[in-house]
Amino acid sequence: MKILVIQQKMIGDVLVSSLLCDNLRKAYPNAQIDYMVYESTRAVVEGNSSFDNLVLFEKKHQISKWEYFKLLQSIRAEKYDIVIDAYSKLESWLVVLFSGAKQKISYWKKGRDFLYTDTVKRKKTSSTNLGLIIEQRLSLLDPLHLDIKLDTFPRIYVSQKEKEFATSLFESQAIICCSPKNVQLFV
Image (cartoon, rainbow, N blue to C red; front, side):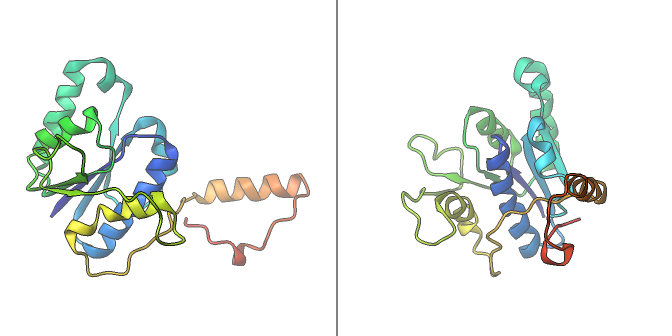
């Protein structure tokens, strides 16, 4: 099975939507899961092992129709089974349309039903302490009827080098930091 998750927004949105990849990996451990993000947001998901490939939407795709078309061709060539579009804007609509995926999931919006096989209505208010944005993002998994306990908190992964740099910086500035045993860092 091959799955593409699309989130072409800013860093916070990309981090929250990485929860989709985390839960898909838990539900489908052998699937190929790819995550499409803007190149400028790459750093916030580096080190995350919940997806196999980052598909980068680069500046060249925005300024050159030819480069954008080549990106669409590469998406089609992957033959994704499922595409989850958390972005739901013109740039991602074309990716969804050209993907050829059997199942295409996004938020319901009038006039877009022809693009998606499954749509989810956005909640207007939060019903848990997770917050509205996380609840909305996780609702995109509803059409898949996953039989798992969902992870609900996004994670930032840091490299060993980043961890050592932060520790060194804190120590040099005499900043008291909690013990590494009490901090959950994903390296």
